Length: 489
Image 1 (cartoon, helix red, strand yellow):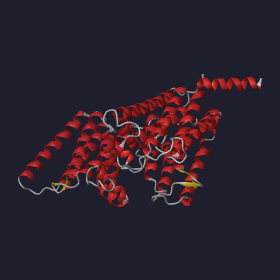
Image 2 (cartoon, rainbow, N blue to C red):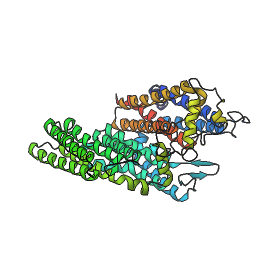
Image 3 (cartoon, one colour):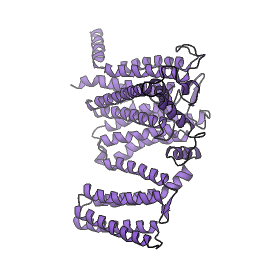
Image 4 (cartoon, rainbow, N blue to C red):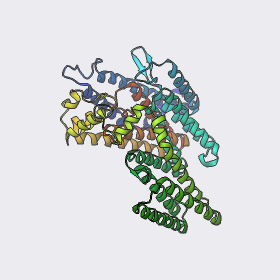
C-alpha cells in the first residue's frame, strides 16, 4: 500500500509540474552557455565543453542546476512554507558572516571563497526573502492594510537583507530587493506609493540633468521640478480627491501668480525662483487644507503632503548626490544622464556595448564573428554585458528572440501566480516575477545606456554559478509549489 501511494504521488507530481516553464528555463540556460562561449571566444579557444573556458564551467553550473532543480521538485511542497522563516534567518546569518570573512574584490565584500569556487550569498538570499514574505502574507488572517504593524513586518523582511548587502558594498544586488514593492502593491498597498517612487526618480533625474543652466536664480532642473509639483497638485485634486472647484482655483492661482512673476522678470525685476515657487505652493497648500476642513474630503491632505515631501526631496538631492553616493556612482549617473562624456572612463563599457549592438544590424555578423567581441573591446562581456554579444553576432533578430523568451517566461510566472489556491503560493510567485522583471529591465538598460551600470547580471545568460543557482532555486521552488495546487481541489 505504501509503495502504491508513493507511485501515485510521483505520478501526481509529474502531471502537476509546469513543463512548459521547465522547457523555457532549459532553453534560456543553454542559450546562455552558448552566448558565454561566444563572448569569451578567441581564435585559440578550445571546445565549448572545455573546463578551461567560461562556457565549459558554465555548463558544469548548468548541470548542477538541473540536479538542484530535481531535488527541489522532489521535496514536499509543505517544506518550503514550514521552514520559510528558518531558511530566511539562516540566509541573514550567512550575509552577516560574509561581511567579515569575504575578501575584498573590487571594493566589495560579498563573495565567500571555497577553494576554486566562489559563491555570492546575496543571490541565494533572494529566494529566502521571497519565502519569508510569502510565509508572512500566508499567515492566518494577515491583511497588509489591516494595521500599520503589518507594513512594518513586511518592510522589515525586505530591508534586513538590503542593509546587510549594502554593508558588503554591493549596491546593485541590494537594489534588486526593492522590486518586492510590486508584491506589496499586488497584495493591497496603495498605488500612490509606486507613483511616489516613480515621481521621485523623475525629480532626481530632472534636477541633475538640467543643473547647469540658471533661470530666476535657480537651476533649470529645479525650475522644472517646481512646475511639475504644481501640475501634480492640480491633477491629484482632480482625479484623486475629485474636487473640481478646488483644482480649478489652485490652477488659476498658479497661472495668475506665474504670469505676474513672468512679466516682472521680463521687466528686469530680480525675482528669486525659490521664494516665488515656495510661496505659491505654501499658499495653495493652506487653501487646500482650509477647503479640506470645510468639505471633509481627507484625501486632499495627500495632495499637500505629496507636494511638501517632493520639495524636501528636491532640496536633498544635491546632498545625497555629492555626499552619500560614492564618486564612481556619481560618475556613472553623470555619464548615463549625458551630463558628462567619459568615453575612456566610466562610459567606456556602455559606449563599446552600444557600438557592438549597433554593428550587428538586422541579422548580426554571425556566430563567433563579432569583431567588438573578439577584440575584447567590451570589458566583462561574458557577465553583465553578455547581451551586447547577442546583439553583435545575432543582430536585431537575435536580441528580439531573447527578449521574447524572457517576456514569455515572466508572463508564465505571472500566470502561475494567479492560479495559486493559497496566498503563500501567489505571493512567492509574484516575488519571482518581480526579481525577473528587475534584472531583465536593469541589465538591458545598462547595456544600451538607459540605466547606470550597477552590476546586475542577465538571468540565465551572465556567467556565474551564484546567479544561475539563485534563479534555479527561485524557479524550481515555484514549480514545486505550483505542482501541489491540485491538492487543494
